[in-house]
Length: 537
Image (tube, rainbow, N blue to C red; front, side, top):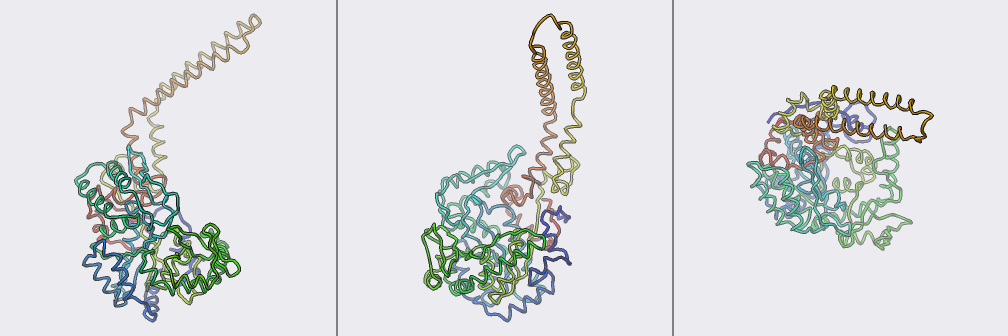
């Protein structure tokens, strides 16, 4: 396994500016991303009180059914004693979802290890599972590569309701079927049988998407002590009572500040990632597993679809008596993390960076600081097959990431064109056209054919076009192996004209490289930076 670090194309200007020293985006955060910021943030956290002993107990209870490794237990004990935390998170995707979920976890672990050394204090890695998310259509599928093309494989069952991932029970038969179909697409390797068996066992022990996700992630990162917590876990909801109260008490101010900050972000030349509104309570009401966004009107919190209308006092009582009936949104989730966890840094992707850029005054409204935002690692995995194809096609990974394979393929197809046959057909067509023109002159004034000659010529032209298309088709078929090489490179490195990490599950590469893939990736000399990591397997 070898590591190469390259400058990938800039696909997100906000992220590019975040890595630059003198850009306006830094005014939207409390900390820059540098060593001095980590020292200052650690000092700030040491002067605040967090219920870490209780939090560690909750995390242990959540993870117990999945198995707690020795390293995980070490981190839990450190958290009990007040360790700082590097946090990242994602919703619970099928087969862990796209690779960036695993890349976030890798980023969290590497950053925690780095800062543990730098700060000479305990720092533990934690993955916040957004089990409260209800867009099941976003997480119920995965992708494979079939015949050098990207193939979508989805869980077939559909729910009539928009229930949360943590409360959506799945059909075991349907889940087993999509897992087996997906692994069949992967192809047989020396690792396939044991890997498939392991995944199917985890699936059989699971009842929801979040449950399945947690078991797989715990299995992949057992050697590295990644702490995990589902946001919907009932004991954690009870732990959050006082913090929901704070969000309700400061609700109007939070909404006002986010709207104003988002406008400032737009005025600075960036988009509005949230489209926040003054009346958005930024809290969901949970009813029978479904989430309903509350709107604040005249000191009432309402949702027409859920048939609820709470006064502020009623909502405060609900937070205290039944916190499981409340859920955070994209605005309040970071605030809740900050109140419940001693967050040294939050690891996120470009989309999360944009959301967080709107939240600084919301943190301040609650007398909080924003934690350091750490952009997650961007990683592209290159299998041995793809390495060989890159050499054969004289392409680089950088060219593939820049979406240049398509042009290279077009150039190749142009190069293999049968110009001689095309020229011969053009000559035949020109000769026939000339003969038709001569024939028309000879018949002029003697017959009324009403465009018959023109129609007849059009028929011949279509036959010439058909002949040319058939020649081109057979010519391409004769070069199918070479063309497939280009398509395979694209499918692996630039699927759907995007990064590999946004499409494929890690099991595509675990099947190729073995379960040690995660351990080997974490052993590479990688750190969070603006460089794209290319890993040759």
